[in-house]
Amino acid sequence: MPNSNSILLTRGGHPYISTSFNASHLRAIPAWNAAEIRRSQLSNGRSSAVASTNGSIDYAGRNIAREERSFITNGACYANERAHLLNAVRGNKTLAKKIPKHLVKLGVVNVGFTLDDPSNLVNLDPMLHSSMDQFGLIAVTLSLDSLAELIRLFDEENRAWQDRMDKRDEYIRDFSIFRQAFASATYELIVLHPKHFLPCRSVLPVYSGPDDTPTFYQVAPDGVLRQLPASVKSLRLPPFLFNSSYRDSENDHINPLLVAMAAQIKFRRYNRSGWPPLEEHTRLLMDQTTALVNATYWKPTGFPTPQPKAEASRTDRDDENEGSQAGCNRSGQGVRTRSSRSKDTPVDEEWMSDSSDEGEITMDEMFDMMSGPNDHELDEHDRAFLDSLWTQATEQAIAI
Image (cartoon, rainbow, N blue to C red):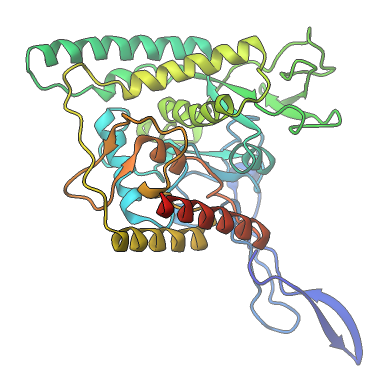
């Protein structure tokens, strides 16, 4: 919430404490029988500062209904936040166009897709939103059955692609083929850092049934969310469906392939960090998610690989870094450039290039741009920390 401070006012010669912040107006939600609530002006007659997180803004561009249930818990709350599956790009117009364009080329989204498309958005409880994007404590991926079905469809399409490539015929994977598995897709919640998520026997309520009966889950000793009282023998949180009843168009239903891509980013980072191995079922979900994403990015033998352009001059690189660092200062998350490659970028990694677009990014950099806390407002300490990391990375890249 910007510029919201405690203030000292005087009334009748006596000082009293107030705040420059006033709660947001509340829109009417007929489905809840909730009337509109308009806030009055501050006592001094001035306009107030209002919260600016995505979860508290009401505007036409929000894309999904505020009354839509939380994707994970099925809970209803006005404070639920709009969350991206693949993180939106802020502060870099080139990347904001290039990433959706590449997803279209992969055949996993419709033409005209943007990262703010409803198929890339869900409502989440604020705690779960922060836990997933800002702190990386949890991830959502598809269930084993849904992963297996989508892998099967991709394998069939990829074989057809290879056959056409061998015959020197052009071929584009058909998005409508993958869509046939979307409606029945189910999802699972994975806890990546169980000691930090729901500590001290805290519980997560999950609502189901016509009466929205809550079932409570805790992190069990094996690091899995299990039904209260949680033990290794308690029932684990079952796979869940996306509630599409609030979205009229089938094109607006969430895209399971984007769910898998977002989850695989977290799994890849977890695996390279040397953290403790997770429970067996969880590891299987992580492996199968990676298999699906690999099938998504698969290219047939003989497919032409774009070559990276010649290295930019020192001046060009400085300009590129300066522009990206400005993006970091605006959005709270640095926009990574070619000169700040992630340490796990393969040497033979394909470069995403297009003569009609400015700039180049690697596949790994695209992954990094699609995951992070852009849905959240960061405080000055967060920004200072991120700015210092960005400065160090830039200096190291220039030195190289």
